[in-house]
Length: 296
Image (cartoon, rainbow, N blue to C red; front, side, top):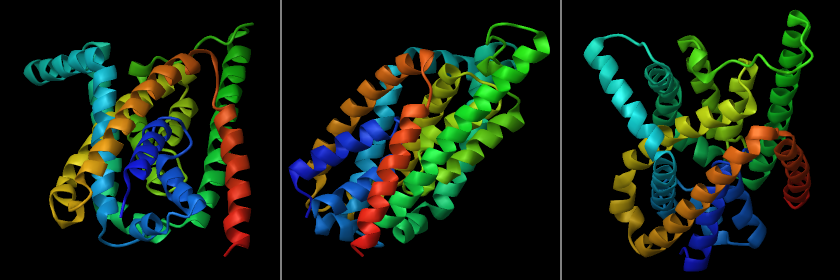
């Protein structure tokens, strides 16, 4: 059964890695296997177990932390969304952004409903998570490469000596927002980061790292919250029996980790890139793949 130290450590890990582009799902699959938490490992790949109830708490707590951090932004976006319903027009950046987020939420939401449970059970193995972590590193490298190539191309086209000319977030087309949402589906695989693939999709469409990260974090809020609330019956039903207090402890840790992470990463991506996270994913994923591959 899940212990309090396990719940707190896994909750903190999930809260941090949900926003850092290194995959929360992958790390919560890998860590118990590394530490020999065999009961947790077995629960992760079971069709029904207390792990489902635990994930509900972690997801809801992470989403609530994001809501608190972006409370002013979400209040503004909610007002903008209601205004567009009343006027039947989209006239301001906030009005456009709220509908871009709505469009991008649909693919991940549908995929989660249809395939999340099956993929979680199928790939909840440390070797699979390690290999997908390597793939995550390659995706992050590709995103940074596309960003640099796009900046260079724009600079040549305008004969500029600077790296300006980035797209504003609210200039994304709705079909581009949909493509960003489709990219999120990859995060159903343990080891592929939701925030990472969303950022890469934004970089490919011409956003800078700061706006790509902001769109990713805003988009994560409804997706993660909906996933958690949809599965509340798992927490309230038999799967939650005997672990609800542990879920509460882990959820508090997840909320704290998520809040501190988004605060740090918003500053980081103003001047930095995905490169350190790509290197970490490649190195850690390769080492762990050898560890779990050789170890059977």
